[in-house]
Amino acid sequence: QGLENPRIALAYSAAFIARGDLVILGTFLTLWGTTAGVNNGLSTDEATTKATLAFVLAQSAALAWTLVIVFFIDRFNRTGFLAFCMALAAAGYLCMGFVYDPTLTSAAPFVVLLGIGQISAFFGSQALVGQEAPLAKRGAVIGGFNIMGALGILFCSMVGGWLFDAVAPSSSFVMIGTLNGLICVLSIIVRIKSPGRMPGK
Image (cartoon, rainbow, N blue to C red):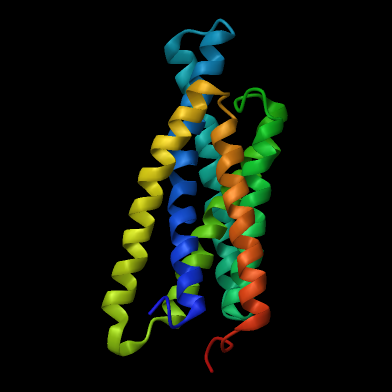
């Protein structure tokens, strides 16, 4: 179906990145905060506590933003909506490249944007595949979507972990932010060439 419908192919690509977003935030934000805290002289327990608070802040922002995104999700073309969601995700993850320690108060706005971007990518990809999957092949299309998500998790776990150790803790965030930006560009192209229908029509 992805070969026949460019919007399903786009949704598959978005699933790969959106699930990877979750891995980078869920795994490496806490690890980064803990490592930074220990390097700054905190005990492991203290550093872990501060890192957990940063993660909670990101997730709280994501939860609050869910109320906003659910309100708008059916009011726009799903392909264009995905482009908007991926732009938010790209901004959230790329901004972490300017952060030294995610547990610092000065990093809080970036962590909030990170949570907003992550949940936006998740909802944007789900909304598009939910609309485009044909009834006759819905199970197969959604199954393929989830497989792409699983591959994204595997890819981001491996490559993100290597970048975290070999380059810098922020580099895994910059990597996934760049990939989100790429999906945003692809979404704009598909929106222009094959926009699909409006929700509910």
